[in-house]
Image 1 (cartoon, each protein chain N blue to C red):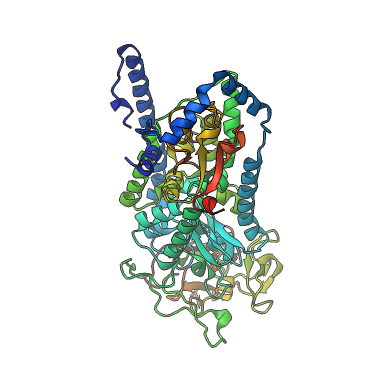
Image 2 (cartoon, rainbow over the protein chains, first blue to last red):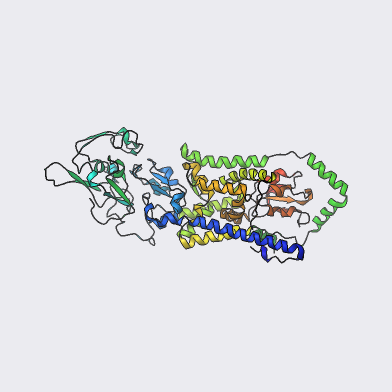
Length: 284
Length: 321
């Protein structure tokens, strides 16, 4: 902005010229201030904890994730169940950054290889974190998760080192198993678009949950459909009337994929995934 | 100061200067041009009469711009997988391509570069060194196309005296570039991407509309009612990044002073008219002069010039042919 520095040569026109240059300078500063200010509004949603999103598997810690993601959506393109969505402008700096809305469509690992990690060009989603990025306590999985779908394969595990969240029975009183109730019909109603891979239907083609009705004497959908071996189990509940009641218990292998939240047939879901939460012990 | 650094400084915001020295050949050309004023005027009018108003380069450019963006869209929608991703980063039949400014933001914010990021960035760097840097702006960037239409509307409103254009200092863009780089380093977030209409539009085309389009709309309104092409001219750091890359590019628009009647039609259509200061009478120092790194190689001036004084050129190749 050296406009103002251009020294006038003739006085009459130069005063006008200088005033014009000054106006232009001030307007330019105003433009700069306005746009930089607007860009910094992106901080607000980031600072508000309420916007913690469930990120795709292999995501770096939130702040590293936001800084390294190049907002291209290649992870969106490879996901076989379209679980990954991109943040909008109300996510601030999270604009264009991928997340998963588990209730709508969870990651069921039907790609087997965590394709989104493979697609990421910047290492925001990664199989193995570089050493200088800290790994939070409880993030590391004790063992490579075994995919129930691949259990009989020679390589049954998923190449995933860290969890993206942990499931939690948020509303025990709403849980059908806790109430001792069964479930019959489509898990989320006929109009629900969410998909899941059913090995007994087609290993390579996930189908809408709506097309796969259930008839269960005691609801165990979250345990039954959890893609990871040993991540959740039903345990008997002691009750006064001696009826068969059970409660789901989330175990250490839980990676936080969110399938339990998606299939939970009650509204709102009794079991939910706490995004970016780390393992602190058994949860029920 | 060499012509190269002068043009580079011009891109950063410095005002164009008169040449310190005009070559003898150009002096002779200018002398002959104005030797006989009647002849000069006659020739000028003659050239105007024979000027076929063409939109050749504009049409080619729009076709390329739409094709590139639609290739992104269909690669996802129809799953043809040729160009996967968005403009910020993608894969062309498997090869990583990464937008230079987005890469820069990520590198500065994250302070860590993985191999794929480097490969993709370097590939794109080479592509735009060859193709002219800011060629990205006018031949690929979807916001450029919308801004062109907004500009047409703005000019119409200016003509009807409903709005006036407010010019900012061109150096503002350099300040923005520095500030956004600094913000990325300091905050650790890719702050610019939150505003970038290029990224927002590209993603909206491929992944579906978003609320962020509202911001793009506001920008367009700002350009229509307040300041012509404000985003591209005074703000967008992507343009400056690509401009720097294209500074050494062999593909350029060059100006042949011999054919020019110095009427300035080219400057009126240009997004970055300061690169065409060379067409002002007495500003050309050589017979053939490149327009410099800020030129987006959009070809509007080539289309509008009645005498063919502006043309696309591939340096080195033109001489060989």
